[in-house]
Image (tube, rainbow, N blue to C red; front, side, top):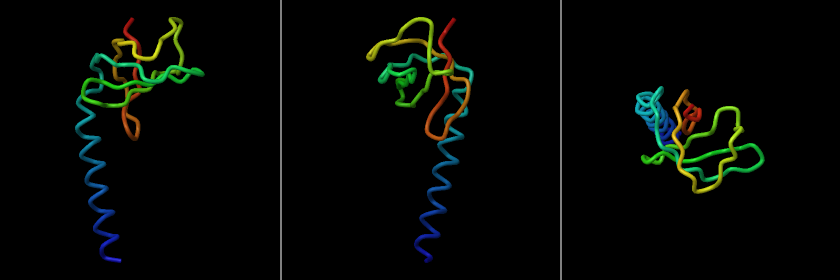
Length: 87
C-alpha cells in the first residue's frame, strides 16, 4: 500500500513538472512536423518532441504527413499542446 502511494506521489510530481515546463511554450511559434493528417485529425511533433494537435482539427489548406509547418502553441493538453497554424 505504501509503495502505491509513493508511486502515485512521484507520478503527480512528474505531471506537475511536465506541465510547468510546457507552460513556457504557450504563445510561441514552433515548427511542427505533421505525423498524422487524416479524418480531420492533425497531429505532429515539435523539435523537442512535444505533441501538438491542430486547433479545430482541420484547415483550409490540406496538410500532409511529414510536412513541416509553423504553429502557435495556444493551450496545454494532458500530453502536449493545441496549436494554431501561422496566419
